[in-house]
Length: 366
Image 1 (tube, rainbow, N blue to C red):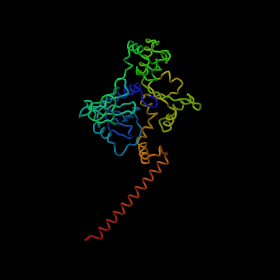
Image 2 (cartoon, rainbow, N blue to C red):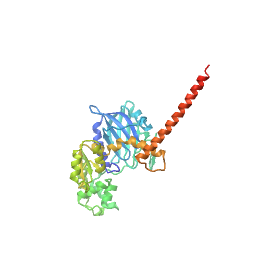
Image 3 (cartoon, rainbow, N blue to C red):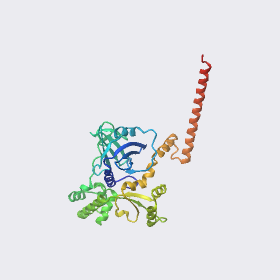
Image 4 (cartoon, one colour):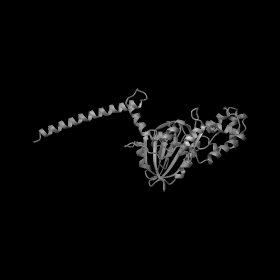
């Protein structure tokens, strides 16, 4: 998972990890920020945890303390209405697209929550017939509309590299007008990182013509990569060495730190990727190993996401003073002080008015 968003490979690993919690119940739904939904999950015989859904970016679990709004936004209220005490029955990836579907059973029927992790992303709640109850954001694309009352249509299915046999790969290479890595990354839906990994494993130049490529070698390399991804059950946080911090130093520092604010800041500064498996392109990067990909993502991005409510409040202050651009912490605090002073002045006037009204009533009481 690079800084932008999880890949189809990442989401497949996440789905496998989350399916271990099938049978758990949804305790509550929160929306600390417009970009983020948090489902508090209560598994049997385990401590509860948060399922963090960041639209267009990432999906993972966390046990962090996170402030929540006193009044839940409308979408969170919809989720609470339909998913409170719902039992999670499965997590599945739609083909190889960057969409995960969460399936729930309730006494009123089944529900599905689709989390789209591409472009701006979206989160869509549907009933058992697939009719949209509410999307986080209404949107219209070529061939599909996401709004209340219509049947949810996922994005057009892209090729699933797991279903790519030799014959299909040969046809793809014969008709492609792009180089090898671009064909694998785009038409075969591997993405740039994994397309380069296949080229490295097959010992072929990434920019060579597909007509000159050895289909057998590429297919063998692809199967080896997919097999490795399917077998791995861990999360690896990768860090970029520098002159000040070489690989050994980063790995030693990461290994010596328990979960804390210091570790959060360390990973925020040095981590560049979370991945379920190592690729040739990761050579030279420092590694910190976690039992699951969810834990690796939480170690890297969890502190940022747990501060979602504070960011939302800060953004509200920015909106209250348009045209200023991004504000410093001091500017935001000064505006907050001015708003509070203005509010107190308003309260004082209201008190004086009510007192005068009380005196008038008392003086004219007969």
